[in-house]
Figure (spheres, rainbow, N blue to C red):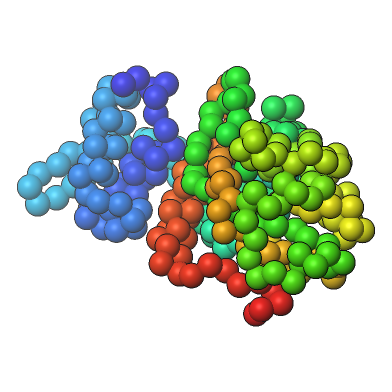
Length: 302
């Protein structure tokens, strides 16, 4: 290790020990363990090629080199930390999405990330296939597809169930449950830009023959409300009231929706991977809590 590899954690470790002259008390102050603190001091001494402390079995004292470094760091380290924090105060990670954000777990992931890093998360809805992550418009994207995106790190989180969106003007809207193949008998309103459904999701012998294309979520919702056709959305809509003229109904046998997160491999936000890992953790915990619960109820039934 050379002085080029010295990090702030090494300097904080040294300053804490130099102030307390106790590895035990310094470890408590830094909220770390004593072996880790000892390794940091050893690596700093190795990098600087000097002994910073004179140790015996009963006491710790600063060496002449240690006294000089402590006097310098008392002034320089707080200024360095202040300079760095002035930039991180305005730091933000942009999370892109195309449709509705999932309930519960993604909000937990955002809260954990912000508390752990001090970096805020900005939510950005983009009506594009990859939610703008391929164009640099967002740093991380949460998608409901399995993207074949070159240059992207794709992380599969899990899957979601689907529900049908039915105009209240149709007798079909009075059903408590629908089946995947019977939706093919109706005109299908499909968001071809950022939607979650494709004609190929149905068996080849029973695919929708009437497709109404649109390019964003708002237009999709209004077309269904106007009675132009039916649509398919994530089941989380059963817990929300999106439109007074649209009823959302569970689909008993629909194929699951993949839930993925992606960010660039090269030139990614420095905390993109950390956010993805926290999202995986939050999703897994949420899935464990809800694994044995029954299907969600519709807003009308609730």
